[in-house]
Image 1 (spheres, rainbow, N blue to C red):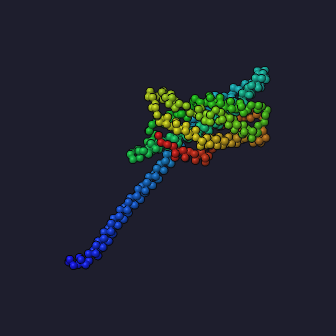
Image 2: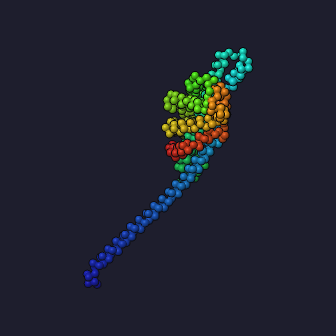
Image 3: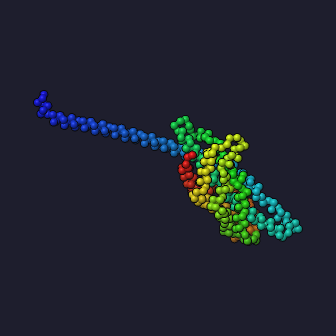
Length: 369
């Protein structure tokens, strides 16, 4: 035995070394294979979760858009139309001019001229203001619901490991969310008088020297509307128009809005304030500025198509006296303020590829609170 060991011990050691190394390599390989298998399972689970989350995001995004189209926007448009008709009522001026026409002794020449000048300014003020407010409010409400939808989704996603479901998201901070959506009424309830005054100033500046007998054709009318818009948008600071759309002090506005229904003071950093600050940041961005500019120009183009139909294509192309154009513009301002489900201006703007892309990116990038 000892002789056998002495003669073959080298072979035994080599054999044991090979076997041991093989066993070690096998264990290393088996461990590596197990880790790879676990990693593949984890990656597969992550992919399934990502697909689930993407489908939930899409469904929730579409639900939020539905809220804007079916509830918030129709409510705002009804109130906007009512307030503009109340604040810029042209009927009294028209009646006085008609009375002066059929009863010549009731108005002097100077009074007639003054009434016509006033009617000219207010008619352009009303139509350009209506176009601007309709466009801006439709975009603002979409900004609101995209920000809110993102918050609701993220808040809900934090509870995916529990029984929390997406359809329960409206129970989270419900009061602040309602106040955030209700802030779309700020322009109508608070900002409109000052907005009218600013547009009236812009219209007066652009229309200075324009006589009732002057002929307006398609090009001149289009340029006049754009110049009034540009004059208004260039007044004051670059984002001065935000003061008509949103309250400057969110906390004070929230306190006033909730005081009638609750005695509880809002927290120093309520979700309402956070949502409003996010909306303000979006509306102040250069990206939104570009979208707003493009949307207003598109809305003007669509409006010109309708005005051409109202005036008769041949007449407007050749030109018609401003005095005859004013009643058509007054009628056009009512079309601009139609219910959102019949308002093609809102639809045209919201269907623009640039607008769709802007809000898709907004929904995906809005930070959580």
